[in-house]
Length: 134
Ligand SMILES: O=c1ccn([C@H]2C[C@H](O)[C@@H](CO)O2)c(=O)[nH]1
Ligand SMILES: [Zn+2]
Image (cartoon, rainbow, N blue to C red; front, side):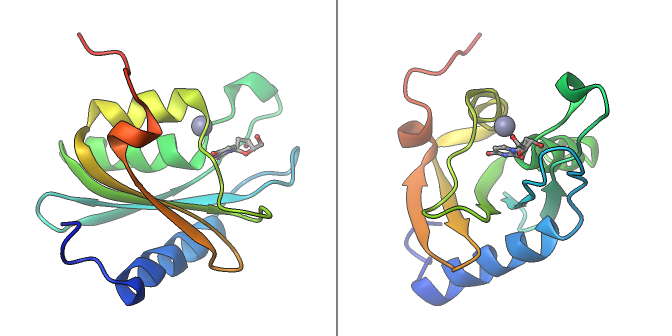
């Protein structure tokens, strides 16, 4: 998949994550995050962060996207793009890195971006080296 990726396509995924971010429910932190992922069949699913008045029950955008995809039967993530309104590309939390890894390969493409369309391209292995595996 990496070979087929060019800047135009990367920015298309950044833009899709920006659209997904619009559905974020973040009345407490006001920090909206969006994610879009592509599975091995080319199917796309998106997610946004969904907060709760009991703050600890809030769910990040990345996990929303992965859980939505897995609930539809998706079992292999080939690419995931994440965006937030950050100065540089957003950096996913540790919990989300581990949850993405469950359905990823070492060479799964990770696109980290922001609303200015700055982006950083990396692999799963780079995002979470030495992650937990059963
Ligand atoms: O990579 C990240 C980092 C944070 N959040 C969410 C969790 C919470 O709703 C808000 C502030 O941490 O942003 C994400 O969705 N993804
Ligand atoms: Zn997270």
